[in-house]
Length: 283
Ligand SMILES: C=C(O[C@@H]1C=C(C(=O)O)C=C[C@H]1O)C(=O)O
Image 1: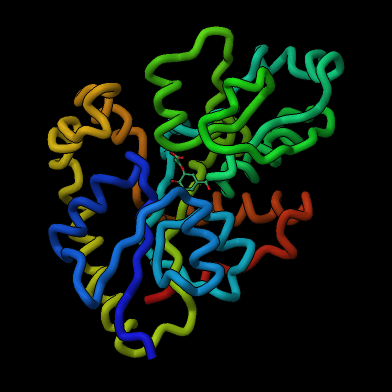
Image 2 (image 1 turned 90 degrees about the vertical axis):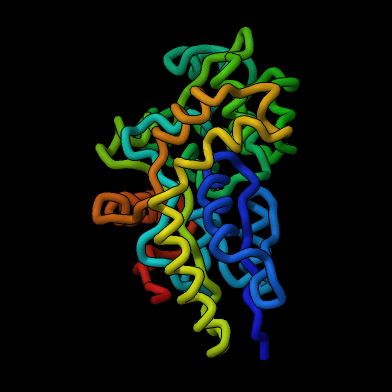
């Protein structure tokens, strides 16, 4: 019977301050371990049961809901629409894509790091933009701009494009597009918990959840520390970090839940998930 809790940490700026605050409350120990990676790695480790808790892709919850529960008050959401780190990068403006596809073929490259944003792009493509059928092609993160075709990028790699827009590419913010389409904030990530934790793990989960609630109140105080980190100081300023984090929200209130359920319904219509699951809470 497992007595420790393995927590996944998406290694993107979008959640870093919350993890810095969390680790100040609960440093790594024999009981609590942290494992870093991109969202798809979280999703697969959660699906195989190697991980117990992670801010994974919201889509992963919708796909395998029977295996999971959700922490009730946490997400990664773009409340005002724009997210600044989830983009369809296109060689032409959206309005010219149908003609471009006719001339250049239907392949659209998708970063393998994503599940939610890949599904979101498919939903917008069909139901909002009503574009001709695409061929979705998974590629390594950070390679899309070398291939000359429309591509999805997420996380820090996409954020770099927002800070320094690459020449010859049009940036289509998928958080904004979902907001324009539905009037709701898109939920990229929810904190999913493996269903069937041992009693010892369930007790640890309560401690982690309390620490996360406290962390939500103080995460802003980590901005200057982040700006000085090796990983960031060469390409993003403290003001830009502050600005980026102010576009994100970690709540999972009624609007966010409504958005998630609506998204599930579109995913179901596209055949990406077998049915629309309920939100079942971990605590
Ligand atoms: C907001 C973002 O959302 C991320 C996108 C995810 C996905 O597409 O599956 C999962 C988790 C989020 O960290 C981002 O990439 O910056």
